[in-house]
Image (cartoon, rainbow, N blue to C red; front, side):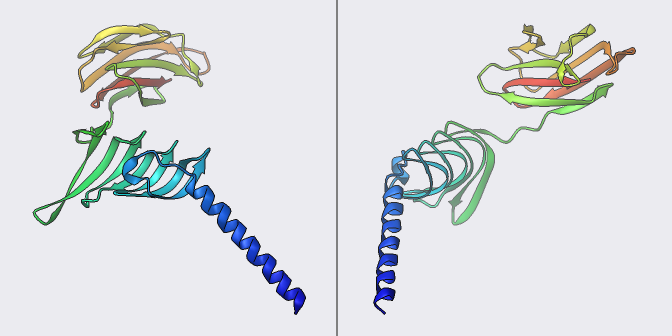
Length: 229
């Protein structure tokens, strides 16, 4: 009986120690946005909310954090009842998402794109390929940065295709531009349509083939387009 009592006391102390350490770690996990910095539950890294978590203060946020700030996909709920579900960057709404608010007693939803907490407009259409001859695939990548440009990188077998001949590359706006081995247009106005005709080796390097493509990009930005033969 005495031994059982000692074991119970040890277990109680151990549980208390775990609770204390957990509470201390959670308390020391900082949220850097004042409106949601009262209570935090979730993952931490180096003393800051980092990863999936829930932060509650005057407002409420549940989702991804980085260095104490909402960063990634999440849902923010204001004290007024409005909500936003979508992408955050360093504590600001930045990217695609859904904003819901009440107007005249009815819920109203806006789906679109935000940039630094500012609504930009509806979600643009995805790039559309109109023509694709002797081409395996075309990959569209919207990069960071502000220039409105479209650059084409020709590839084959996973590497740069440096055997492009008789290239005729056109666009309905912008100025022709070269960056390294990529070719394209800067200062373009979106939507923009690009087309190209050229000759290149086939994959086995046994004969030259004629290739062509045409596509339209609707969303403004700095675009890198990989064309794979």
